Structures are given as structure tokens and as C-alpha cells.
Image (cartoon, rainbow, N blue to C red; front, side, top):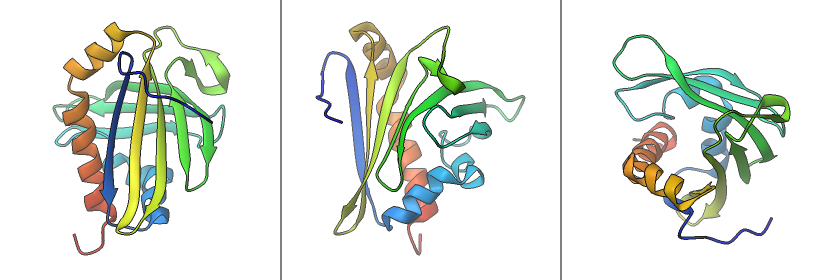
Length: 158
């Protein structure tokens, strides 16, 4: 898949995680581990559905104040290449059903790096307004925080 960065509609962020690619992948693939890092603490995540396959559902809930869990992500996996790439979008829900309010698509890549894993997210939006809104909502702070949480979960001795 060839994709180019469109600065008016895309946001990207990456981090070197000092753990093997398989460990980082497993933190994505295991629901219980995923819940530990997917949303910035102290908020909590609950995985409702996670069918890690093309067309599979990806549904999460969030509790930001320790109270009830509210809708967070209702998406569909578009591509799942073991240990290499996960692509999902909220433009579709599980089973390839169109979503009511599409916002973004994300390509998560996992690559070997001399220090562990090069973990990157390329998040694409349908318009510059959606990209700007995502950035203003705290894209960089939020995604950096969850990548830090992911690193703490999988890096040995941390």
C-alpha cells in the first residue's frame, strides 16, 4: 500500500519502543493488555469488540472520571498484517457497514529498529477542518501519552 502524507489532512506520530516488535504487536492484539494503554490515564478503556481481521469490529468505551463507560471508538479494521500493520477507520463499522459520522482512518505500523520497534501512526482525515479539529483536541498530547503507556507496558525493566 502506497500512501503519501497530506499535511492539510493528515497527522503522524511515531516512537521507538525498546521492546521486540512481537511484544508491541501483542499489546495491540490482546484485549486485556490493549485496555491498559489505549486511552490517556487516568481515563480507562474497555474493549467491547476487537476482531483483529479485515472487516472486523473495533469498539471501545472510555471512562474519563471513573464513572460510566461512554462510547469512544466504533470502527472497522481494514487491513491486519501480523506484526507489520493495522489499518482501521471509523468511516465503517464492523462487517463493512457505513458509519453515521466518519472522522478518520489510521495506519499503525510496526517495524524493526536497532533499539526495538519503530511504532508509527498515520491518521488521515477527510478534510483539513477535521484534521485541525483533531489536532486542537490534543492529537499529539493524547497519542504521545498512549504511546508512552504502551512503551511502559512492553519495555523490559520499566
